Length: 216
Image (cartoon, rainbow, N blue to C red):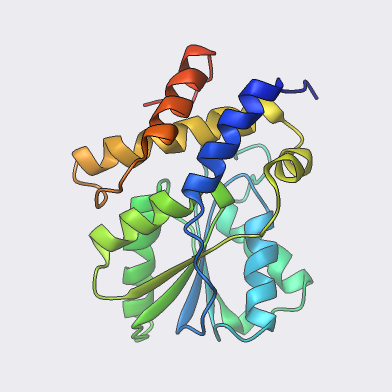
């Protein structure tokens, strides 16, 4: 794995912290695991379930070009299988297997719960660490009546990079998610989020350094 320079890591650390909503997990009606290339989402959702933060999990996600090889049966299906292996009862998991973006994760999960006659007033969104803020902003736009808490496995950026095994991929994904915070708010897909100057500056430096493959 190609190592990132110290300057690049410093800028990524700024964005890494920005995307962390720093919410404390609280007991909620349901946990929602947002599909991605990161199986750690399913692992952490299972951990929260076993600690009784919620009685039911919805795993949501079909495939993206970045996940089709890793999860050929779909992100949510593989997440469910992992959670069951970790001890979550199969009947405590619902699978939403059509969503291909975060907005659809939220919308299709709402529909799935309604179809099952499940009413919720509080949720925990379990995601990749650098997806928290975008997931929060999207949920506040599309499902404003629920109380939303964001949660991810708590680990340093360098440990996360080691776990994923591809530093450049992680760097590009973090930069892409940072752009989406502003872009999706402008398009009406998410509520606006304040972006501190140091975050804007770090983002600009990373774009200039060539981390642009996940920009929209």
